[in-house]
Length: 140
Image (cartoon, rainbow, N blue to C red; front, side):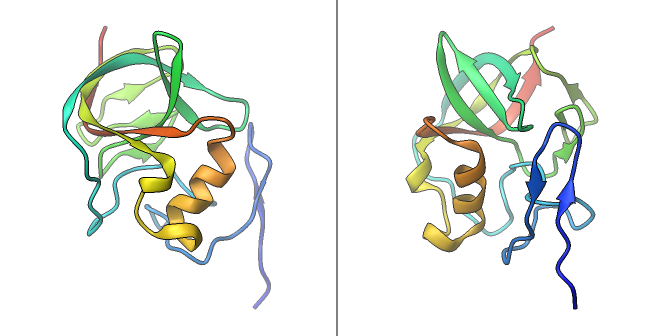
């Protein structure tokens, strides 16, 4: 079987991963979202900020100048950048609020060879924290 790499607008070539993607019909790593069967520890709190989409397609929450990688609630879908389980479309520049936790990227499940290591390796760069939303909505 030949390996296939996909090139999406706004993204570089995306190599296939050994780990499952969140949604079977998405190429590459899909939309970073909470995966079934995984636990995202840490104290829950209210979260707010502005969504920013980088040139590589990765989504960050800007909270008063601090950027964190966004992990969406389970059931979200890749859109522009995301469609929430209730059908709400979130866009680059949207003010959002919700609840969840903030974790160091090294604290995400799976260790150095898991799905989250692939996501943070591609998206995190200098960003060392992720915001894991249990619930998120546009503040429009």
